[in-house]
Length: 356
Image (cartoon, rainbow, N blue to C red; front, top):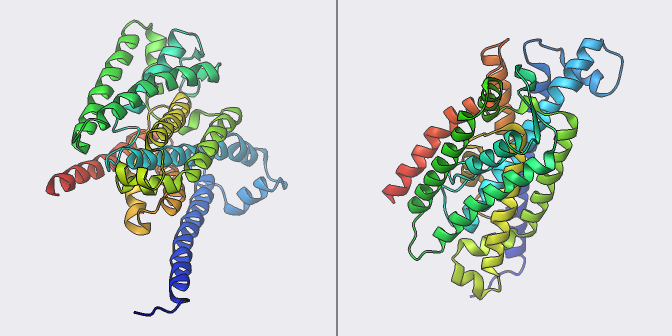
């Protein structure tokens, strides 16, 4: 059978163009959501006033303060945190070959939260306050992140060990994550039991995921680790594609499976620990975003990873804007909204898995 030599390249070019257009559309939606997030809140700002403030043109001091000191760092934190969690969830699902994998469902978020709480309360890496705006101020981000990373890696290594057991199913790994999450949650509660009233109130508030508590310096710290991780993940996109077909097949095409799996889990755990150290626990973004995108863009990680990253940032930004408006002028922690969104999706995925 004879094939036109130009058919396959043209078809492949069309395939690539379609994926890129979808990613571009997601990026445009993210830009629109960012504009809406800067305009909407307890005080609604005209769009042109926001544009003038961003362009450093003359506007009122109130507008500048709201845009530059409150809403812009909050919105960018939501984008970066959502992107990091979504990319981490995508990679965990790939290296563990587990559709239910994410930092939250596998207990890694809870482990990182315990590590951050331990550093803040015992090692003195944070200062406590009694108001909503300064419940916890991270004075030593390196110590807090290292502590969160250490315990998140302990959970990640436990999950990786279970994934290597012969015939370990996704359900078994998720149940292991639930057990680890319960263990670290209990350890965090133990710290809270021995805390004084101010520390207890601060830590309970801190465990509510909230992107409003970061400053520009903390946003820069978080963005650096998130962007470096995204570069690492994209550099391994072909390896993740190969591992989707099975470990033996991946080894057959030259993929160092164990090294790629360990590296992916380490970097995903690091990003998760950095995010949690600054914004607290935000659940289900790392689970929901990859599955939303996978149904539209497919399983090719060259496109799935950037699309899931943009979608994760969009999802958390929209959730944060909605949480800010739903009880205005009171602020609802964004983690409450993501839990309401993510729990039904998680249940659906479990039911779908058992039907298979």
